[in-house]
Length: 311
Length: 249
Image (cartoon, rainbow over the protein chains, first blue to last red):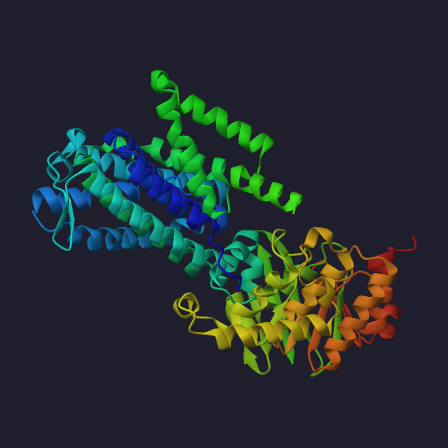
């Protein structure tokens, strides 16, 4: 198999360490923390769409499931956050398996619509089942995340924890990218029939990928909950799923770095265009159109082409 | 080796195959011919599990494989290629070869990630080298398909199809789109694979290509077998001539 390429890991490590040491402003640390959560979700989404060709418009639901389990564990059950870290991915994995079994037999627009429907069901559930979810008002008073007895009660502490998890995840993504799993998923994306005729169980593999990505997204949802200390259904609406799609496409489909680059690029938009808050989706859409028309490989794909050309 | 017994396939009201029966020799190259829409690819799909036959059965090496999913048919030792190339543009030929290996040998994801099954990948690399060498595509191994001639890519598909050491190879229009030299080269490769004991069943339109290879020919028209036998016998079969050339009047 291919050798590991440490470039992405090193760039990310330098960036997060640099921010950790150089930035004291809590707001900016918060922006960086949320960017890391989104980057991990977008990179996972990229494995679904960019590698395997599964277009899921319901990723916000899994993010929400993780977040709400985190909130329930903290507020209603008063348990240690590590319970949420274990339960949320397991529940999301199981739900994704059950939902994915019929849904992943669909392709293209039909699959997008089916997953969108799933996302809407979960969104309605979050709003209507207020005795579990707190309804539209959501959950308040979510405690701090703690690890080995160490409570992450400041922005800086959570940032350091999230940085460690972010770098570990990037390392694991890189191992995945250079392993045979990368090829297997791209073969499935290219031709399911050819894969089946070569003995690959396509449905099982797609289910495994869909469920694993759901589990990763739910785990990030748990961290999001303990970071923001407040959640409501608005954060897990269809807009978030579209956001992930934009991040993956703008960053570059089929590249692990694509999700990360996309999350950072789109993460800056609300900061730079803070005064145009209501027009955020228009800016997203415009950027998406430009990338699709002029840079089909996204930022990562274009950079790779340039490097190859100059090599 | 491969026995097709009264196979019928219907798509709604359309009868694509009707009582198709023939048997391929224990070891040999069999060609499946017929005009467009005769049902050749549908028969391939019925054999390899992509389409469920409405009637009849398919047996391979004495075992009934009717209704098996494609993954299981492959495990029985039947490998196939498709009319279109299934090659990922951004991967090199060597990387594209893995498709032919991982489905049969099923590597462990955990062991691969932790570096515990280096032996597995070493044997995979050796087998890949061996197969690429066998069909003369080694020089292109590290190149991506966009810079490789079409004829070489067709040979590459053969290399990938024999990676799993199949007993039988099903080739769907292997010579389509090739020039004369490339066809001759491909015929040589098919012959070479057959000489290693792999039976071959191929759908093909090019009669010259078929005459140079096939010992046994089956002709389909409108989903039914209208002639079978040696190339010469089928060539002289009046019904086959009528299907291809039409009636005199």
